[in-house]
Amino acid sequence: MEYSYLTDSGKVRTHNEDSVTIVKNKGDEILLAVADGMGGHKGGEIASSIAITHIGKRFMDTSTVGVKEDAINFLKEIVSEANMLLYKYTEDNPESLGMGTTIVMALLTKDFLLYGNIGDSSGYAIKNNKLHKITNDHTLVNLLVKSGELSEDEAKNHPRKNVLMRALGANITVEMDIFDVERDVDGILLCSDGLTNMLDDEQISLVLEGNLTADEKVKKLINKANNRGGTDNISVAYLKKEDNE
Image (tube, rainbow, N blue to C red):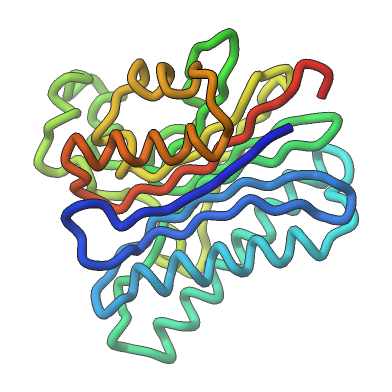
């Protein structure tokens, strides 16, 4: 198993509001997580950092997430805790009102693979050299696509494509989507929309298919996104499984 993660401010933004991590717990289970923050006065930067730091630490401190049902509850619990930390931070720091963050996670154990997300950071599974999007974006535009009011092509360049319907830190309670995925994938990719707004699935797949290390693939994805404009912060977490894992 090989994995790597990286975040980059991009070519336009003056600071980075993304946070990303890949951590192992005491039972050798692996959690990948990407958060894309939002809000003024460095609010987004603080929001994503609080979320990723809390989620990563809670996971590393566990010996095991247990069976699948327990793991689902654990993911929901740690995200709910992170949400309350953000909510409390805005109460204590009124200037940060409106800050929040997306979150996308993938949890890999010897028995199962789970994805979870809030917002529009994306989770993919790689199988047979194909990229399969697992998560659903919680955006106004995606809602309009699902209701038939917008086409996929119209959604790509819609002026309100970044309006989120769900985010961590926006309300006292938060609902995370959980996806149970067959474990026999070749790899896992999580990213902020700074990558997917610059590169389509085919361009991402071409990089992941290359004969490169995990570190090299992650760096190449970020370089390509920057070469195409780098209009947002770019974060990538990538894991490649071996056939017998």
